[in-house]
Length: 137
Image 1 (cartoon, rainbow, N blue to C red):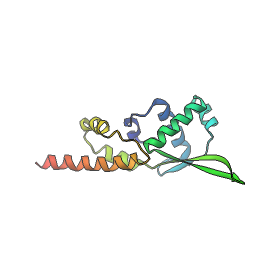
Image 2: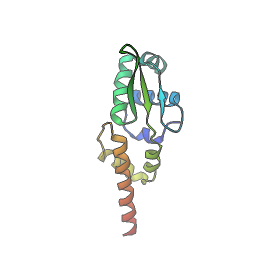
Image 3: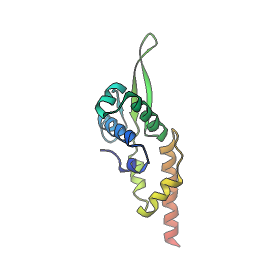
Image 4: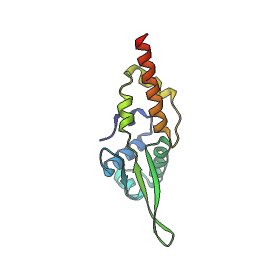
């Protein structure tokens, strides 16, 4: 299952497709790892290896995944290990924001970096607090 929040992140369709596949391969719930090669990912997701590489960069920049290299031996790299970050907390917070305010929240928070998901968690918490304050007034 893919968190609904991913659909609101304004990712490219190819990046969403790749994320969905890696998420499924990595397992549900907590963060997991995907060991598939770019070639295999490309074949399965019906895209080129170059497109997979571009999408991986987009997903890293959005904070949804991290990529580390696994050494084969004698300094050679055997493969990439893609870790899918657990963003269910973001998903939970996101849906506490009233629907009419979500679009504005995404438009206001366009910062994409390795810490984008963590930054967005804080941003959504602040938004929820502001909405609660407005409701009290």
